Image 1: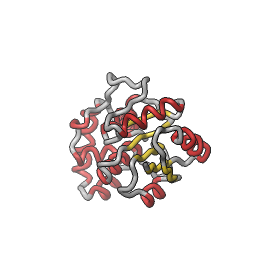
Image 2 (image 1 turned 180 degrees about the horizontal axis):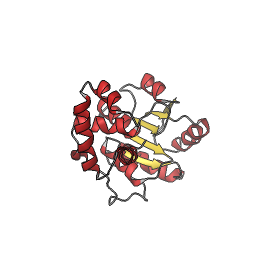
Image 3 (image 1 turned 60 degrees about the horizontal axis):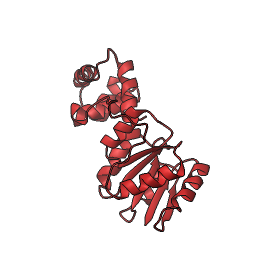
Image 4 (image 1 turned 60 degrees about the vertical axis):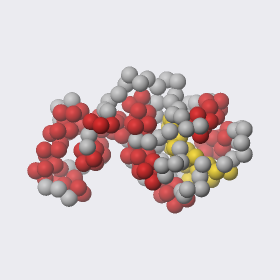
Length: 199
């Protein structure tokens, strides 16, 4: 079994690797320290991807979605200090097979690995399915792309250039997003977008 463990904190990577070696099956563990090194190493030979949600180069749940599309047959287990149920929900909806917090003990880590390798979804015991900020079908592709731009605080002009649309169209999209998110302004939309996307 080949596992790619990606985290920018060396001590945590080493501790996680020690726990993973307690898994019943032998594991070959490779390491990445950021999004760029993860992408460079990643191929279809890995049985499992474990990664920190907030490594350098990561864009929260959006990056999880990119991985899930590129490697649909490889389960992704997010390991993060973020215990916000809304972030957990966003990662699962974007294709993560599981989510564990960095406060988890070794037994929970092994349980999470076993669960996702068996094709099931693993969520922390503290996770509440009652906390849902946004259903995945609530936004179309362009609106979801706009959401990620709002999360980083970009202006309409910059968003229009990146999305290759007119500023007028972006303004219309922003108004739609405000209604969908049930917020009054861009600042509130940006804050909510960051929670949804796990930034």
